[in-house]
Figure 1 (cartoon, rainbow, N blue to C red):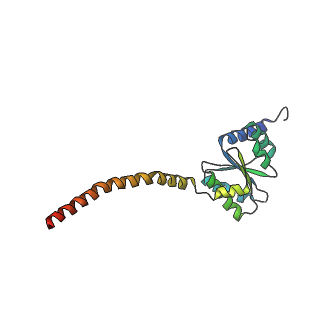
Figure 2 (cartoon, one colour):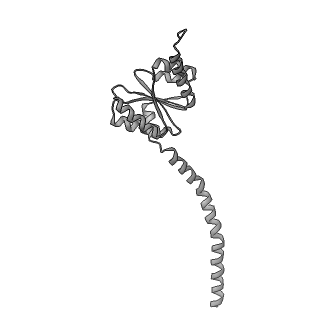
Figure 3 (cartoon, rainbow, N blue to C red):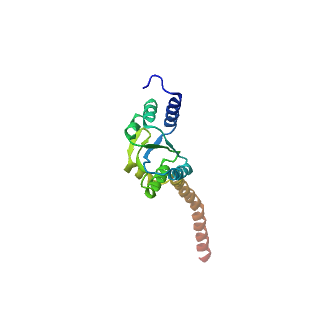
Length: 176
């Protein structure tokens, strides 16, 4: 590293390092050929899912990645790279990137660093096929609640069936 780096570069490295430490999922894209207006649309779409799109110099990102212990990310930093710092729902971020790249072929999703593991483009798009966090949580709640609902129904059926049996017995005795 340069012995006396400029303060602006030190600040950028620190910003990137902090973001890399704060986010478990970071997507890497190539934006070559995208117009500024397209990038603004992409940023807007990513903001709706809690993600943030930033463009930094690759050399500064490499330094920050090493400092943050995210060395695997360095492999994806070729050509003009934009970083997407995912919010809490990585699947929603992957979906937003996939949808945008379908309509804007200039955006190339290179891969992602997912909780320390490097994902290629196909793995990112597979992540995009997962249901959203809210849907997964609702499915989990349904799985947890199903046995309780069945148990409550069985408990409710016991006295009801007993009452039907008594009524049938009473009716049978009255008929005899």
